[in-house]
Length: 381
Image (cartoon, rainbow, N blue to C red):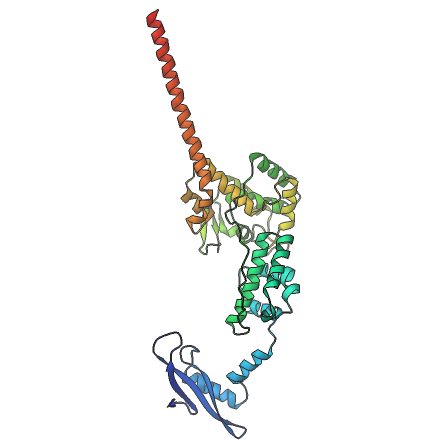
């Protein structure tokens, strides 16, 4: 292919088909002498590598001064590095420092992946390794935990492939199927037992967090991030910052939630409603809420915070007084499909209302028939 000159000495380009698009693009090369030999090296493509003649000239200068490796040397160095899962995990954290779930991922890595696959390269992984990990996790922990750990494993592999650090696997990692339609609920007696256990537990912060989940339906992560600055007592709303759906939302501040938040504001010195011991952003509270759950004798599979969000939603849906659109807004669901799991509760409420209407009509008919029977008897007399 013909060399085409640029305004920079020792820099030229050739035209080639554009990668992933129509038309042509420039592929830049540099020429320079080193150790008595003339070197010609490709430095990058116009669009695929965002390369320009000026950038190529800078690279040429760095190559002459031994301040930069060639593309070939970089590729060979990458091949020489043993990219184990442990090394991929380090690189993944450095590349995603602001990832929302990084703290949770760090815990999953430390507890479940570091020992089992940390020293292995992705290419050494076989389907049996994944099966053993899945079986162990589902026996030790919940199906949800197994899914999230395996999803992190898959994410690390995809990260290595995307960064051209590791080759693709010859098989796919499939996650166990979850029943995401599970809707947890509590009876009136169970709710009373829970509130009694909260009142008797020494950890008032954990108890208040559980009460706010019950009174507002807020998510676990939203409770951890909640600041007093997000609560407007005067106008009566709570601002949900950076929720699961992405866009900030507001929900009404009811009297029960107001009481919890006012009490916390009076005794807190932190900007967070539910701070950590150092006054910063809290990320865990499992031990205390599990203790309260046990004291209240709640079902073993009931999730203390997320389950209370379901209780909040179920109570509103089964009342028959709240439509699903309103419920969607209160739960800050991005899609109405997520709220549909409560539709049967609203249907039950409507059915009860219909049955009540039927009973009222039947009672009216019975009264009318009785009255007509009495009139006939009186006329015969």
